[in-house]
Image 1 (tube, rainbow, N blue to C red):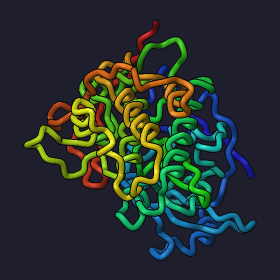
Image 2 (cartoon, rainbow, N blue to C red):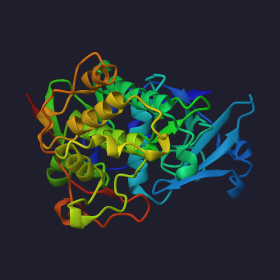
Image 3 (tube, helix red, strand yellow):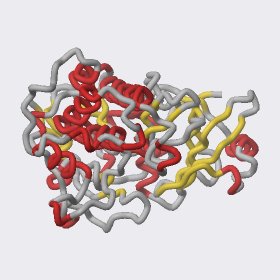
Length: 367
């Protein structure tokens, strides 16, 4: 059984859903996705019992389930009360229903039958990077340098695909450790496209509501709502620093030393020519020093304050593979946000993951 979403069935009247908005443009290219019944998914998830819950966020809950054909899946149930969840549901369907890549999460289908809106994805045996690599020293010890290198490249390849290889382009808007899932072979999958935006090829940027997670937000986007593909590049740079260092973006740092977050710490170490100290000590020296330092430099290039100086994702991949020498590349001042008041939002940050959303009318600026 298959179905396609129609505007009349799934959208209520909203200023965010004007006919020229990126979300509505996305609906025009939707292809059919498999339709599950609510009862079918309820059986698969064992009645949505707490013992089957594998995740939770502002959008709702995620349950592990087993379909009738034996497929193990992650059942993402969006909160019925959330208007934001309604928009995110449609955005996620629009973004991932007709694209496939080894480093993007695979959508099996959805459900609008019953009390909730539900998305069904492949189950990832090793959870998210936030749960594993950044979940404590015991977990970090599992991730040797080659594994971290492969994860970093995989994430970059997934982003390059949505930024440069499909039409319309997609900007994810919420690249962070908890949105990178790992399969049984620790292959990374970019997930959670609920905040993503379609990006017409002939536009320089989209001006939209600010949404994302503090610590990963590009400053020009957080302050003005000016969204480009380089917004994701900034977030990737922060994530790359986390992968190399084993530290969270907003870990406890020493403000006396001018350190408020991981980006600032990396910048101070770069200026002191001491980037090797940023590499996770759990690696116990079992890595190629020039490559590890090179990855930190690539991360710093991705978080430069001027977004025009950041590489696109395909260039970042070439740097990571050693096809472009970055060791003599000039790196300028990174951008970072210290004061939450600098972020233009319409409501206070949520308690879970410090995700934020704001309200701005979507506007497109052509070349």
